[in-house]
Length: 436
Image (cartoon, rainbow, N blue to C red; front, side, top):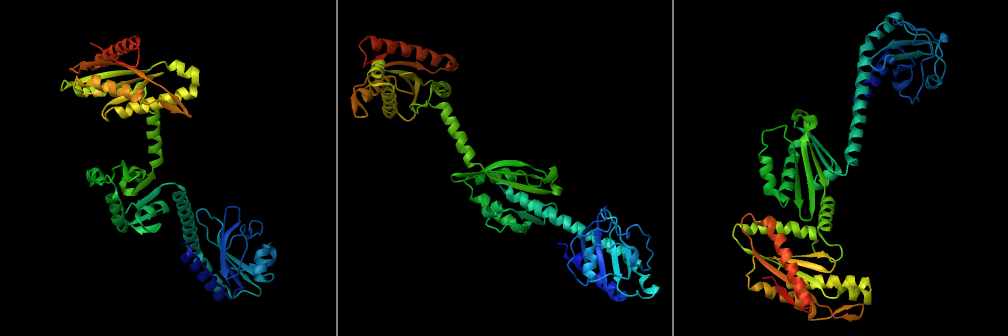
């Protein structure tokens, strides 16, 4: 990136050396303390860093005439490049912002030419200063560019950055893999096709097309949308650079698949009973309220069945709590299998379970309760080679979902079903009892 100005400075040094018959001409960039940050010369020789702060050169007022070199303390690196001590030297200051002591240094081992030739060298000062400034700015831009590349490649997301003029663009490796392009610089127009093709491959492309079409013509629009590709989901954030579309636009593609799966698992855990895996009481109450509210408009009936494992304490006392836990798991699975997919089934607490039958025919409710009872009692439960005879008692209640009743209907059904369950237990267990 800084090659043109460096080559121009080398050419300028070559011109000055040949014109003045100097043995060495150096264009040097010096910082405020007189340290060399960069140099080039003619002939082209490798020069390590050196310091002119104590050489006496920077304190002298120069007017274009070579002077006796004996009064100066030149750095060893310069003497080594010259392969000896100079007899005369001339410095043409070329100060610039950030480099106040830079200039052009000429060294002669013999006598310098007539004054008329060297007197013209100060005319090169502005050229040297301009070229050194251009080279310094190019170096700064190169460093900034490399830092930018390091930054965008270190971000675990696809990045597409469109220049403010809308012509240039840069993409990192993550974005390149998504778009099927090479990472690095591109024409913005060349990325439009791959960007659209990627969007059209998404499962929700119709939704995305509608969302982005609504922003046509708005250079400052910002949006964060999920692009779904099968099991993978990318959160795609696009916004103008520094809030102004004239400065450019950035697209960030972040793979949020793992985050969404984690969130779904957390929701599942929050709504599920950790032992049996069926919904917990909190989820049952929330979902039941939604189901009842949906049934109010049509006046459909709903029913609640309370299921309690008979003599469960005796199972725990006889076989141990781990076996009791396995029994509850199998009871929950058999009950769930005995119900319809649209029915809601949950663990209500301890050895008690509950079911909400959505829109049942009233005469079918006792039969559904009997299916639950039979699903458990028909076959002993085997845990670790031990066959355990298990039965359940079931209490049921039916109610009509009328407008405005959802706040009290579930509470009333649960209370009535629980009373019916108590009647089933007092009547001998392993039976169904329906509330009047």
